[in-house]
Amino acid sequence: MRVLGIESSCDETAASVVEDGRKLLSNVVNSQIDIHAVYGGVVPEVAARSHIEVVNPVINQALAEAGCTWDDIDAIAVTYAPGLVGSLLVGTLAARTLATLKDKPLYPIHHVEAHVYANFLNETAPEFPMLALIVSGGHSQLVLFKDHGDYELLGQTQDDAVGEAFDKVAKIIGLPYPGGPSLAAAALNGDPHKYTLPKAKLKDPYNFSFSGLKTAVLRAVQREVGVDFTFPSHELPALLNDVQRADFAASFQRTAVETLVDKAQLAFRDYAPKSVVIAGGVAANQELRRQLSERLPLHIDYAPMNLCTDNAAMIATLGYYYAQKNQPVDPLELEVVPSLSMTKTAWAHNK
Ligand code: KG4
Ligand code: ZN
Image (cartoon, rainbow, N blue to C red; front, side, top):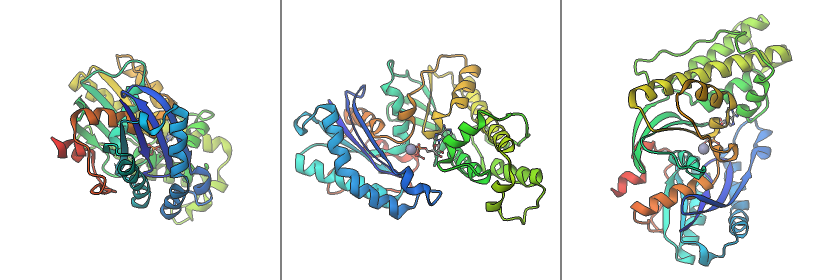
């Protein structure tokens, strides 16, 4: 079964063809990073307009690179939640139109759940029960998968997502957008023990909180350069030298990653899963991979970096499993849901 996946929930327009949920035939990603870099973050209206411009060429390229015509495609899977409303509308509208015109079954996919499925494109698929640490720009959560579509949310962030914290801290210390990768790169030259930063202590041991850590970095930077909290934060980076910047990046990254791994380790002890996977943009972080492999007593098969950040291969892969268990949706009825937690996905609606 060949599934065409379409993804447009934030600032990447992507399409991919995956065979039987295992074999990647094509993976086309058009990133808008250059367009948004001048603003220092994603501008929703600009993102939607860019999706409109490239969605059809990206889909055509994914079919061409897979060596497929429409006759070779058995189903279409598209991200319908969560994300920016204008962005989601472009991808779903393209998918709904194509499903109607080409007479293909259409499956709506939850973006965050799909991130986990990048791991099913590895040489060996993860075994259930599977513990998933989902860490992206919008989500930080620990989820225990008992089977496809059968999962339990163990914990999640109470405020900022970890990717969001990477992005905000990068901004505070004057590193370029997108913050996560540039902070990770700066951290390579820094001392991870230079600054002591706090780890949030929460009542529920599986929940996360990263907003306090972000504020702690801000206060530490202010102390380091000798200004108080009334000093305009956008003027702080100019007062830091490269050594201080690298030390702040490394100290923040160590603390944020340790927090994630502490909780993953706890969940591993409590639930004894057969596999552990990480998913979402922050799963591309090398320090997270290093610490997790060091502290968990099992082999972790990490997904390639380009399948950790937003892509449509993960959408097509989950689409395959979804098609095994669920009925397709009516293309005329499919609506986007900009804000939808993973506990209430379409899997649940169809059971
Ligand atoms: O999953 P994703 O591509 O988009 C969302 O669904 O949110 O994740 C984007 C997030 C951003 O916050 C970005 O800064 C972060 O992932 N990120 C990283 C790295 N690469 C991307 N964070 C830390 N280290 C990285 N290498
Ligand atoms: Zn994502």
